[in-house]
Length: 395
Image (cartoon, rainbow, N blue to C red; front, side, top):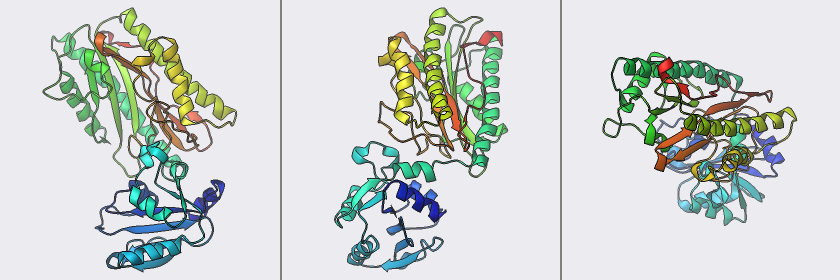
């Protein structure tokens, strides 16, 4: 980590310092930014304070005094709780505004990792605790050129998985078989292994009424058999099986037939128009060197769907940050579940995935792409962008 860069951003934010705190590895943001090994045993509270000016300070327990030895700065050691309080007060002396992994009214839950009691303790010293959300975007969600390249390489393989899966559905249906959603998911997972891709869960394979459930999870017990006339949704996310690799996350749709009914294609076109409107806004702002915030991207996609009369059927945010976890801690494209007022910055990746879900008609639609803002400020989408629902039996 580069202390000088953090200190520069603290000054830009008008903050006196950034206070990191953890207990039992509860704050993954602190662990990643400070390069702490989460596998090493830890059982006591620790603090690390980076002031806007001056030398960082560590506060660690006596029996785990080694905990932050890999980081620069002066070390203070506590044993009784009174000593923890007095040392923390000493470390923060003179500060008025300090950032922590906290979000007012839990507006951005991804950064709400510090418990209320610890925030109360810091405030008892006369300090105003501010959210570290903008800092987290810069120092935890920012991607290097190498990490962006890993995302692009994963994308090439993920599109192969998607293409082979649609082809496999076509083959089995043409042979007179009726594969289940779960069986096709297992086929995709075998491809992940073959291509050395890893993920924590998924992918989603959904047909008909299951496409109307944005987070449907096929199992051996809840799955349906596929047949001609079914609407198919594939949502797949994975990354290369290497360190510091970045997820790739897409959703594509198909129809088991040689042509797609106009009604389905027309609703899908509303979704793609919303997706493209959101992407266009991001491209325009960066081309003009103008700021853009997460909630604005959500607004752009949502307006298209609202104007088409399907607003009540768009039941989730437009997109999420993507990093080493598929749902990262950077800026989200959201003005529904939360209002994300963080800027979209160079060196970030996020999904754009509007949807329309109509359970009473047993249909749902989503189109998902990943937008990357390179470190040069270019807006890039790696891989093909779907334009129309795929007639699967033509494959």
